[in-house]
Image 1 (cartoon, rainbow, N blue to C red):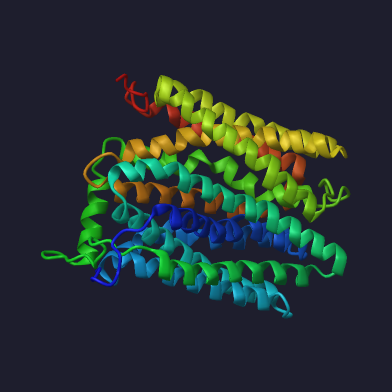
Image 2 (image 1 turned 180 degrees about the horizontal axis):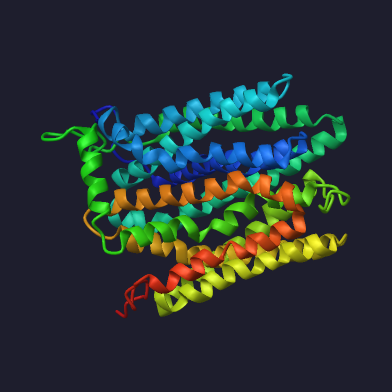
Length: 428
């Protein structure tokens, strides 16, 4: 709780951009860049897909410990302390790169990072709402999204390209990834110190007091209300299956681009993959997301649900084409990957709107967190098996399987009831 020596407010421009850049970095490194790193270090597709998917589970399970963030200490304390722990985790992962058991040891440290990062998400998002008025929250929502995407660009683009350049010059990929993970650790430690000083002390940021129920009872009552919603079991199934194909593709895309032509891949370097994902892919993904938001605001979610499901899944044909023809032209490859990313960004907008739709009600904050947790779980399971499937049938047939994986959501969608005007911008 604030006292007379600590400011209750500070200019949000001093801490919101850095807070959400800091939030994005560990997520993108653990979930996406780790796949490229382990592939570069010679780990098989089956192993890297399984274990990097398991690393994402803390984001799926974070509602289980979110009440403790409310009850113990302040959101401010949890925010900067988790940044420090994330930095320590990355230091451990960097050191592990120089050991004979780098894969197993680094996974342990990255799991620590994942747990601390998912906890940081709970605290930082709660702190954002406590530190800003409603109108300022609306104003800065675009700023926080922009800096989260900047973190994605840094992770998938800048850091991957840097690792590729260092590996080429030193002929030592382990050293290259040690340097990159060490840099990320340095950023997180720096942000720990910066936010400890720069975050304001909102008067409302105090441990929650539960007069009549324990934290566990509060969680149970919130969960019970969630499962009383109309069509909720069907909605949960929809959430779990919406990204069944994409969850597999996202784990095998980088290994496919990096594998040798003889192994069915395209033989690209780490630097090439960093440029494709971090520049072309991110621009296409962002454009797709922006356009998706525009069309839903004009016509509503219901009108665009079917087109968005199609536009999200059909561009996966681009990867099948790449696997079947193995083109060598970098711009052909980049363009086709960009098409898939655009479709993913466009179709994912409908998914996020559906999560908002099912979260409506008095517990919408907690229920939206449940939805995002189910989303993470729905990505982890297909991602975990993707490497085994790819190794069993090869890349060309794997990408056909990814296309077929959209069939369950196609079957379920007609059963979902959505209000005709939901998501449509109201006329003033």
